[in-house]
Length: 134
Ligand SMILES: [Zn+2]
Image 1 (spheres, rainbow, N blue to C red):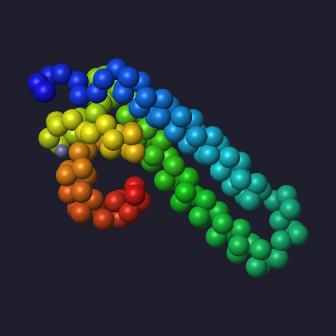
Image 2 (image 1 turned 90 degrees about the vertical axis):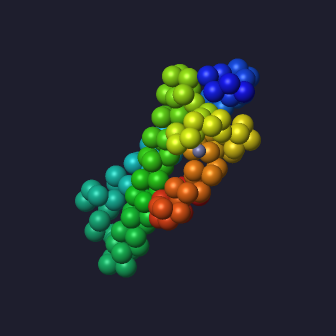
């Protein structure tokens, strides 16, 4: 396969674009729901009925939701970047070595930017991020 030709067929690109758009919609919906869930904890309404234990639970719940929200926002950024690369024609190639990323890998991780070899190398040098993305 010549380096200049696109590694994916139009059908494959359409399928991956659909996966990315569906994931984008899910993440945006999730983020909207989490914002709604977190916002009421900050206002005074209902605060008088909570005792100290409930306040502690609410704070823990909120920090878990914020952590999840942050992961969703990171993933949403990746999904949007992948959709942009689809439009640019840069999609489906490793950013490190420019080799085509296998279609099966893109089906599992449509936002992938790296081939498996480079992803593994990256995760080894960023153990925290690797766990978060897994
Ligand atoms: Zn690579």
